[in-house]
Length: 329
Ligand SMILES: C[S@@+](CC[C@H](N)C(=O)[O-])C[C@H]1O[C@@H](n2cnc3c(N)ncnc32)[C@H](O)[C@@H]1O
Ligand code: SF4
Image (tube, rainbow, N blue to C red):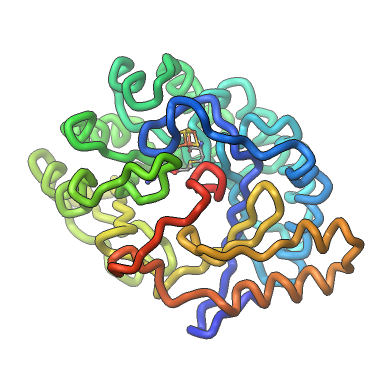
């Protein structure tokens, strides 16, 4: 098992399949100038499947989420999903995507064994979408959402980041739109993980502000806290339910004590936390012929050293070297 010294067990693996992306969300990447990982540094499809196999078969991982960068840009995605769906025990398989290429791929992903998708959509307005992502792809994301639903990748979940003065006024409208369609919406507080290191606490729209904006239109009642478990989102019933909304308050109400995550970057490094400053290199071991048991031992040691918390509130907090797009969000 992947245990740490605080008694937590990691059962949820986030695998980054690429650091590249076809959008340039302002809270994530600069317009240009970001250095991509070179091809030889990236794990091959076979290497990814081998490491996921070790995690699921030998280390107690039960859920695998593919992310990036934009995971739909990975040519081998469908076959990676199919191989992971064939593992015993079979893990839950999900994907976090910007949705741009989903209309084309949702059916094949479902057939390969993908269970669910989280699509990131911050706005219902195509112009605001362009302001936030620097690309005109709003329509493609809407088509991707519809395709995910049609393919049975349900419940479709949406992630939204609010930026002050850009899309924060849209919170109630986004929620109404999701409720109408049966999509589960979660707002994520903006985190200091952008490649350009431009995050400031005062610009961040806090969970409290998000809830205040939603309360102008909806009555929110907290779901019993037991239901949250290790899930980072605190959830509220909207107007008595059954619709819900989640808020991931990673900065103002971190959930580190219940964290059950471990992460693998596209270049084969294990990270015990999004905000970790250290990594454990599995790729070198893998390529030097390490046996599965040795890879498992390295992974266990990496997680044993996991810190109690991300420490964003600590005055000593240092943003990790790698941005979110390279860690895998
Ligand atoms: C890094 S992206 C990777 C997957 C895919 N490209 C996408 O956008 O869904 C994963 C999630 O992280 C979120 N994200 C990116 N940068 C963030 C930041 N600085 N703070 C909070 N969330 C962020 C995105 O909105 C997205 O929901
Ligand atoms: S948040 Fe996702 S879609 Fe936006 S730039 Fe980052 S990796 Fe790309």
